[in-house]
Length: 173
Ligand SMILES: [Zn+2]
Image 1: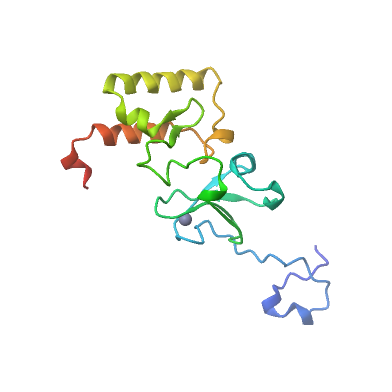
Image 2: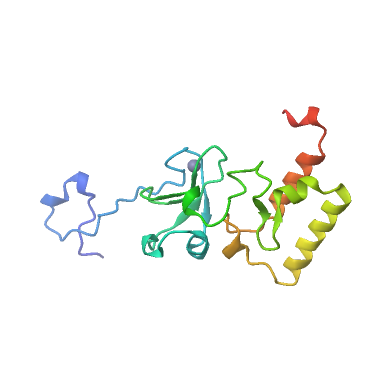
């Protein structure tokens, strides 16, 4: 069907008589972070563009992944493994990278910080969750543009509240 050579360069397509396809980016798609080796989560291009603090000339038309590993400084990496953006290149403190930093937001759309949830009573935490849910239902959130992970924060909020309200002897699993 195609008139192009489909041999990868390492297979020796220089000797093939068909014109070579563009193999400048051999299919080495990896969904693991090149720095920590942990599997990333796909993020939309608009998330990367709105969260980066660097010239968007650096953002390519490729897929980007979010690294949520707390011990790794990489926030976004390209699926081709050729590009990484670290915490200093992101406009917001990233909750996953600084889970104990009270100043980091956990809900970026409605601006609830980790510290706010830490300091709140269980009743106030419920009110915060209700406020976030109500904002979501009113279509007022923009997680893809404000949250570095590019998706809804509620899972993180529930997780943090659970940690805060679990007796200390149960947190060391
Ligand atoms: Zn990483």
